[in-house]
Amino acid sequence: NLYMSWWAPSNGKIKRYLSTWPRRVAVVFTVWIPMLLILSKVIQPPELIWGVAVLIFSAFGLRLYFFEKSLKHEIKKSGSNIQLSKIPEILYFIAFTSIGVILYTAVPSKQWLVPVAILAIFFGAFTMSAFRRGKNKNFMLDVVGRLIFTTGFLLNLYNLVRAASTIV
Image (cartoon, rainbow, N blue to C red; front, side):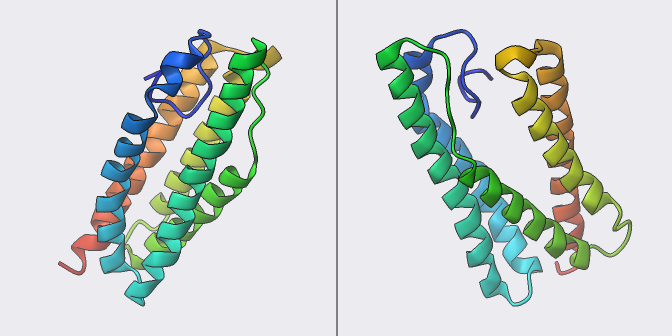
């Protein structure tokens, strides 16, 4: 999980971490393309899925670019102060909120599960980022953040299946 994570490695093995970018990108496409295809059946008009896809893949692309640039800089200076741009996080926020709005309007019942899933994703991501590195580093809270994020993501998949089941 450490080497496939989008967070900086805490064990200092930055070169090994950088070598996993192709697998990380493959995982992103493997996870998101099927979800976007299903979401395209739910969204009205279906062409709006391109906007959501651009947001998601732009966020991942920018995260990859800024993260790799920062990690390579850290290798050169042997430091541990990795600086990341906030632009990908803003795009993630817009994309996940957009998906939440789409699902909220598409699910037939228990609409409250949609905001719960989106909030769990946001809270889990915040917890991971807050306790992964730096003076507040806390491995246990980082793991709890990952569990919250994963729960939100799985709940979001459940909401996606519920929304798609109404049109199949």
